[in-house]
Image 1 (cartoon, rainbow, N blue to C red):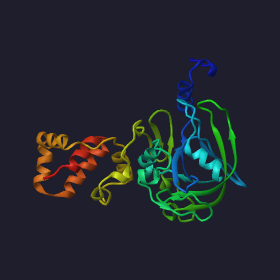
Image 2: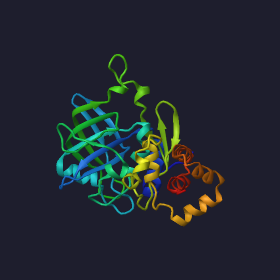
Image 3: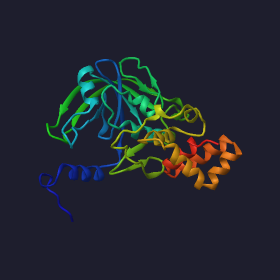
Image 4: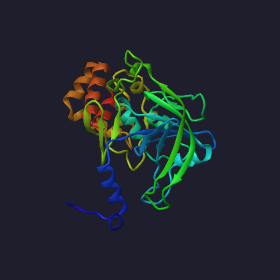
Length: 291
């Protein structure tokens, strides 16, 4: 048996062991606002419910291992003492992953991830419309676990109001565990879908993805693509160049046929198939190809 003394391994190595051994972990998609009222959105899998009377949720933004800096969520929670915790279903997992990209302060991750903001009733941070359940919370306390990279910061949140999408309720008004279709976090790129099992989601680019807000409107307005497709398309550093698109069309009989048929519906459906197979670059080339 492998035996590990936490003091004798690097923090990244220990972090990986802990995340891979303790799971599946629920995901808190936390919304806060900065001092200028700009929303911030970020997911955290160090999260759970710890009391029902009073209703208390706790999540933990850790200090970054690489440089010991802290996340905007923590700074905003310290400043305003308010947060909205949105739960994550399978239909929004790719967008949620994209929202974890470390954009600069002041960038609205709602827009980058393609989520809709809806106002809260009792707190300033907005809610994620796509989330099946949203908790408006007051921050009761923040407990720092340490001052080195990897140290957590427990944010104790008291639920002031809870919003539930009626489409996930059963005939008795209770949350149907199949309909809510929650996802949870494991180690590496692995996630778990509560009603089906394991799947992978590529981590966001270490360089910045273009974001859902930069996707052309004809794609965003199409009924072919869902939120997960938008997340994959937005997690792209650069769009293909016209030269790359021309080479793709020249070398692909299928692309030529689709363009010659002038049937945008079929072209979009084929791009969707590429996305389902995680061939994102090819999907982009087909989407941006011109007849």
